[in-house]
Length: 187
Image 1 (cartoon, rainbow, N blue to C red):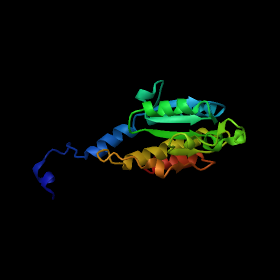
Image 2 (cartoon, rainbow, N blue to C red):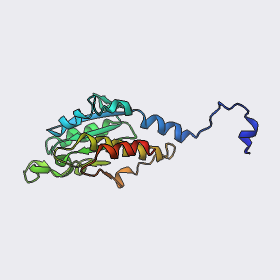
Image 3 (cartoon, helix red, strand yellow):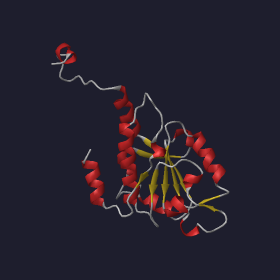
């Protein structure tokens, strides 16, 4: 028996590290700032409706970058929007995460040969999660959020060095509901 188990006789007492408490709080209350530019934003909104309902995962939409942890870029990023996206990203508090949602946000999509479209949001700000597809499915959105929560769970709050954008999460193109259920139950 360990020293703590010998000294503490109360079975209701739980000991845990500060990292686990802070990471649990961060992954259970992700505040997202949506930057919906085109049709991908409709699929992102569908993930918030009653069938998928990301509120049950603690993902709450916010209207200001100063209260958001997660920036979701849905649609093609044009050159005129790049300074706005940089400003929004700079105003977000640390730790902050970015999701590129849809083919247009990932690589420019059907508009990639246009003179004013930037070929991916990662050219403007560091992106942590790539969700491909035209139109991306709400299942892909939820799968990306669950993968992000897994990585937040493993991070150290005390050593708070962000290494996530170095190894971004790439969500599979055709995520099924069974894969989402398996990911939730696999925790």
